[in-house]
Structures are given as C-alpha cells and as structure tokens.
Image (cartoon, rainbow, N blue to C red; front, side, top):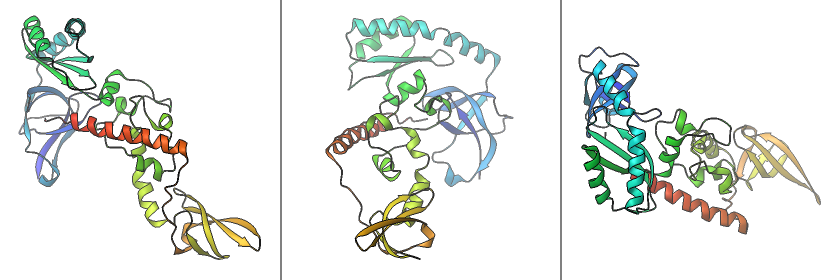
Length: 306
C-alpha cells in the first residue's frame, strides 16, 4: 500500500496522485508538487489515503511543501499579468503571419515559465515567435498546441441540455466517444444532434454506455424469432433500458403486436445486425467517422506527462 494525496492543477481538470510523505496535508490545501515539468502549484482534492501499488500507474512524485504565503502572492501577481501576455502574443502571431489561434496564457506560480495554448489545423513553425516572446518576457516560453475540446473547456459555455458544459464543470478526463455508442443507444446519427460545442461527439454518450452494453448482450435483436406465452413471434422493437420487447405475430393475413418483458421470452433464433441505412443516414455516418478520427487525433496530441 502507498500513501497518496490527489492534486488538481486546474478546475476542472485531471487529478494526479502524489506522495505526501510526512506532511500534514488536508483537503483544499494549496501545495507545491514535483512534476516532469518542474515544480507546480496545485490544490489537494483527495485527502491523504492508502492505495494498492497496482492502482498507481507511475512512480509517485512528491509533494514538495504546502504553499506558503509568498507562493500565493506570487501566484496572484503572475495571474494578473496573463491578460497582457495574451495581448502581446496575439500581436506577435499576426506579425509573423502564423495560422494559429491563441486560446489561453498561463504563468507558472513562480514566473519561471509562461505557457501559451493555441489551436491550429496542422503543425506550426513558431520558433521565431518563441524567440521574440522570450526576449520580451525574459523567461522560458512554451507554446502548446491543444485540441478543440480543450479549447472549449477553457472558453466555457452551456450544452444543448441547458446546463454548463460537462468539461467545464466536473469532467477530469476526456474519454473516447464512438459512433458505436450512438448506434447502440438508438440515437439519431445526425451530427448536428450528437455533436457538442467543440464539434466532436458529445461526452455524455459515454455516461450510460456501460448499462446499454450490458443489456444488449442479454436482449434479442430486432428480427429475432422468440417464443412467448402467446406463441412464436418476431421482435419488432426493443426498449433497451426497460428491457421490454415489442413482438409481431401473424394471424392469418393480419399482423398484431404485443409487448413483453425480455425475461418472459425465449430466443429461438437471434436477429442479424441491421446495417442498412438510407442515403441521408449514410452521409451522416461519413461525417461522424471524420469526427471520430479527429477526436482520436485530439486525444493523442493532448497526452500530458505529469
């Protein structure tokens, strides 16, 4: 077992584990921690506790100290300089005619480095820009390209549900979302209906997927031949979460329908997976596959080494 505390650097943002050693650390404390990028300022969001070593992916780095009054003053001092740094960087981007969109600026708590976050369609040669910014600010400069999901997280906003975006309120990590999830949840494959403010597939498609996947394994597919208390019939539709089936029966030349709980029917022959779609659905699927591809690229580019 290893002692850990959970620290977050941005809100919302991913929580990382650190070794508290013998420090008396409480929830909400501001701390200075050791990372691959030097010392960083963060907030304790998980109290000191023990975890099995197999649940800790990487060797634990240490909490250096609880943030001092001077650390907090420095943090406020450099935070107040960020708007001006943003303005200067935008001017220099225009001067160098770079095809990039500056989204955020972040000073390290001790002023030893400034990070400029930007989005761009491809790779950007910003070496001359970095040199000029370093000569202006007299400190280390890092330009970091981020994906559109991270851009929207930093800008903020509301989703189609009317609530604040999940990525701006509680989501620590961006998990991969796929077209398969929308299909299994019987959601329209229209990109305008299942894309978020970032233009990628909505994160909330992931929330109920585990429940859907579990139920789909046990339920008959549309077209399955099933045995019911009223005889054999064909599954016409499935209410996955309620585990209810609408079964079609033939009575002479007429058809009639009846609903059953899935537990009350027996599958005789399961239906085939239905991949047929009309031209409009096929076009939507093509667009969604492009979004899925872009999302995978975003996730690859946004891997952070802490």
